[in-house]
Image 1 (cartoon, rainbow, N blue to C red):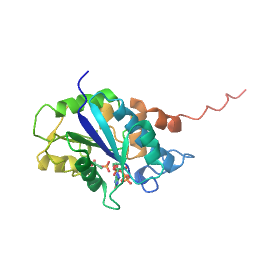
Image 2: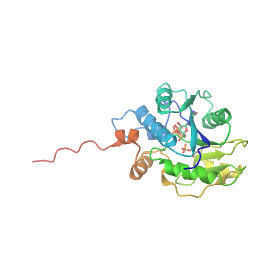
Image 3: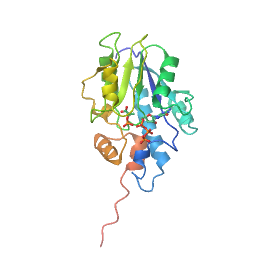
Image 4: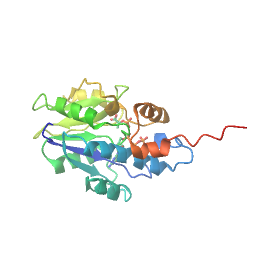
Length: 213
Ligand SMILES: Nc1nc2c(ncn2[C@@H]2O[C@H](COP(=O)(O)OP(=O)(O)OP(=O)(O)O)[C@@H](O)[C@H]2O)c(=O)[nH]1
Ligand SMILES: C=C(OP(=O)(O)O)C(=O)O
């Protein structure tokens, strides 16, 4: 087993305003419960990854903080109303050392996929690396070695923005890492990969109606 060395920073937005593109994805399931489940399944996989030394969750949400703390993460208060990149910078500057920013919407994430990507990111010293999302235009992970600022450029078109900033794309497959969930279609794709327990509990098909007759 490789020596864990990475601190992973996972920002989680306040649940009442998070994942707006997912609203209505699971009829009858409160939206905040789904947003929380996505984050908890992400956190669970990060904490089970053998390349991760520590997990820092950047959040102000009163439901998220105790839940991720009890799972084993350290919690850092968010930078109020400053956005995802500010939250990532804040976490990375607090963490120090090799640091990887990760989105909190990866409910199918497997520790093995994350570990493989982090080990690949350690391959070229002194350089930042990123993992694009499944469509290839967004980013799910941005890794910086010790002494190199994370310099996050998450948002629309972030894969090109990270490449333009000098970060190198990591070309591994890692389907469960690349499958972030922004829309109901993304959630269906993630379900095909296999959801973590928190999201699966909400997304599991309702008991089929009793067969007629
Ligand atoms: N702490 C913190 N986390 C954020 C912030 N903005 C986004 N995130 C997190 O970053 C991850 C990826 O961002 P998005 O996919 O854009 O999430 P989102 O903004 O909740 O989604 P939409 O409302 O659908 O755009 C999500 O897991 C969010 O929880 C922020 O301002 N602060
Ligand atoms: C945060 C990102 O995008 P999205 O909001 O689509 O997850 C990103 O890919 O950098």
